[in-house]
Image (cartoon, rainbow, N blue to C red; front, side, top):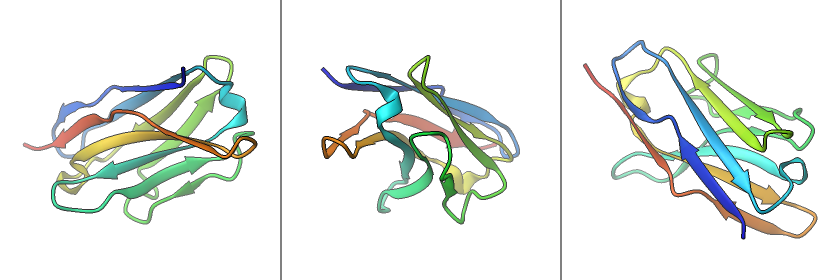
Amino acid sequence: QVQLVESGGGLVQPGGSLRLSCAASGFALGSAIMSWHRQAPGKERELVASIGIGGGSIDYGDAVKGRFTISRDNFKSTVFLQMNSLKPEDTAVYYCRAFRPFVNADHWGQGTDVTVSA
């Protein structure tokens, strides 16, 4: 059974940092394009960052460029999102996504809450 479990969310002050983790199971992480998405209250879900199968092809949403860093450890089946210089507008539920192109399968985690507030 495929599972994606996010962790690391919480309450942080503006300017602070958080590191999100996405633990994958039920498939080989090395076969999936991984990405983080977020959805703020009343807004549509948006792409935060994505990383290709081999760790290349990294892309970021305009709102987070220069502040967030995505990485992956295929051996540990985990994807990370390092978030620095957090702003109140980064407040959202953050979701991990795995797209497996060889089997055309798409998987989402349950999400982790991130709140940036003084």
